[in-house]
Length: 115
Image (cartoon, rainbow, N blue to C red; front, side, top):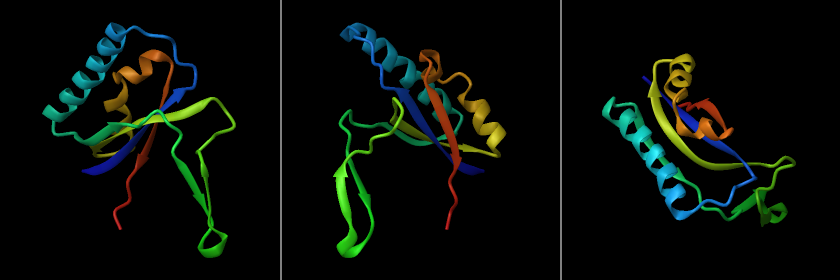
């Protein structure tokens, strides 16, 4: 089985949600992760902090560090999962019922190349 990184892309349009609504959404993600865990398919995952982080470009004296990353579109990465699957097709199938898709967000599926 291979490992696949699921990057959770989010629209940068976050609705104002009550604490109860946020808890309900979080519970959906947790249940989805637990379901995959019970199948031996989940290898990890986390929500990323809401702050922008840092972006590094270059090397040595040319290294530039800035706040970011910022994208040209209103798309940000809100978190990730690592899943185990036999193929891209199977990794995509594992994502079909991910709650992230319920909110009009996207999931980027990338195979992790072990070096």
